[in-house]
Length: 191
Image 1 (cartoon, one colour):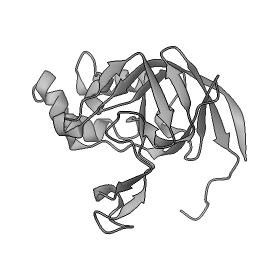
Image 2: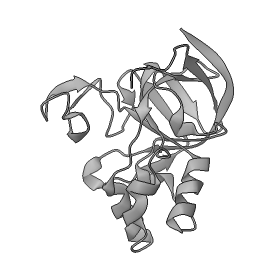
Image 3: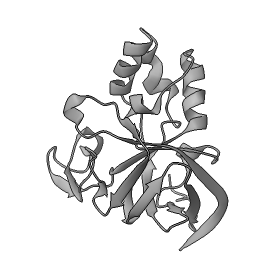
């Protein structure tokens, strides 16, 4: 079961990276179409993907698995916090390869797995989990602010946003709102 929370996020920006071959950075767009395979025209789209280093504890590298990394979502507030910790004037969401930038939900990266972000028109994104920082973003930051990116993996921990997949398809535009729905479930007490 899920329950609507009092939190609504405003979509501040939408981005697409059509090919990872050209780099990590995504590009601003005014609207996006989300299908069950993810964001149309995005390098991370697809119902399945090949397993990578993130899931080596579960699967042999290159195994075909369900794609729960269709969408990357970050918050304006956490981008500003990371920039402050890196001592740089700003951190662009494009540099992180983000797809959706939101504002208005405190501690956005810490929303529970299996939460839904549901638009006013009914588009639903299932939050799989927190997106852990990586050195690839650090390399992009260094291109803009030399020697400032190396600390990114450490300072962005728990502030890097979330990844998810599409549960209900549809259209999103800048300034749309996403209501946070959270699972009704206690924390697993044995960890």
